[in-house]
Length: 220
Image (tube, rainbow, N blue to C red):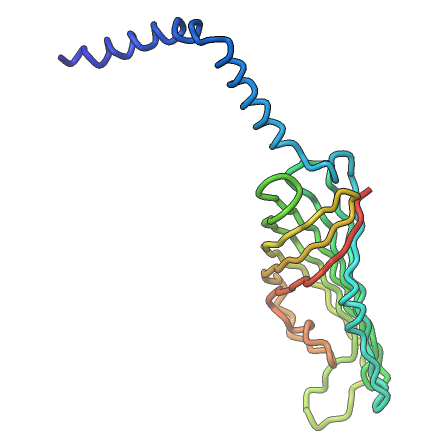
């Protein structure tokens, strides 16, 4: 009785080739058609089939710039990036950046973020994706006085720090190569620098948390 399963196994292996040879030609044709259609469905969308590079810009960040005449404070945000599409048709490598600069009480400050991000789409290069990346941040401005009631120090300081993050997002590509997207990332900096800079909260920030509402781009 113990040898029965082994006998059945070899019997099935022996008859399967003959069964395949007896399948009608129409059934084989249908099977090949199904496989062909499945392969077509897995091909990249036409919008990116021959695209290798994308350039993007976030207009909402630019609109966030303010000017206050009371004490002369202002700030400007420039957000964009470059993406490489041809490495893997289910993924992309992107290099987003954010440059913020302005003045606080007539003292200039600036912040620069440069990221390297890997995005992996759930299907081809369109729709939802998950991501992981690294960030380099440079912050420059006036050092905060040790005592709140003390006058401004006037001393310019800067910080450099790096961190890692993960995220999720969504991309939509048109047939002409224009695209837009939204996403959120969260992570942490490696640096433990406690130096504070006037009106720049990012200086002592340990966590990375960014949300892009709308970022538009064009693929070439």
